[in-house]
Length: 261
Image (cartoon, rainbow, N blue to C red; front, side):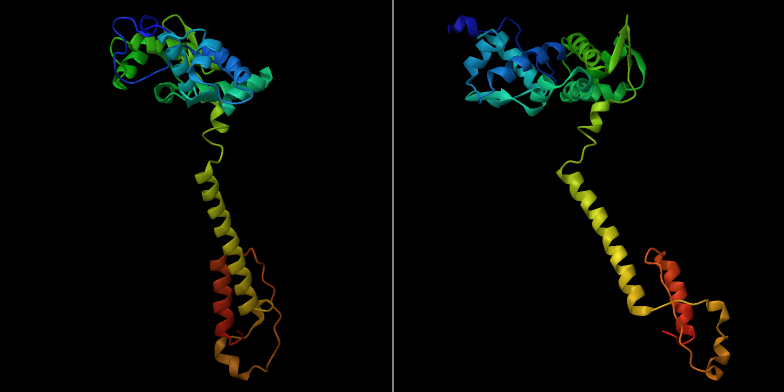
């Protein structure tokens, strides 16, 4: 490989917020080739650049970076391979593709930020460009960023362009598979909530077992003032374990007032 073939054209990277330099549709094409290429394991960078991106120059580097930003490629120079998301996209039937494509589309932080700003709305390209600039996309690259973002959302079914305006969907259905699917933290939170519920249920059951054996109609008991004149009686009480704890406490307080428990 010659130094000239690796050199980038004048201008190079302009700085600012990074975004994929190819649209999602093209990235998916490369991802499918990547899945086949790395089926047996990670492959060195040069093999990936030549075998998947058809370029050992900076052009291949740009494509590789874009596919990686969409969450479809992982690894480093020593070995790159397809991600699990890329494998799912390559194997999914058409009807199961939309949520997977939407997840990939919103993996680049700048694309996610733009979609979250405009979802369920119809806006002009100029407005999207304004927000992209606010997200620190270089002013000279803002138009390209907007074009690639819009093309990617159209491919993923998240947006529809009509001339100089774009209508975005209300939400990404892929978020139910990615963002709303329980992460390790979410699973832990769910487990804590369930644990608290189980603990409350067990507490109620222990309380009902300890404090009360059975429940009878409390309206038939004599008032506390005449309690000393009442012959000893056996009262059977039944407690519903699902009873509201506060309501249970009121019943127990009433029974204690009669010296029953």
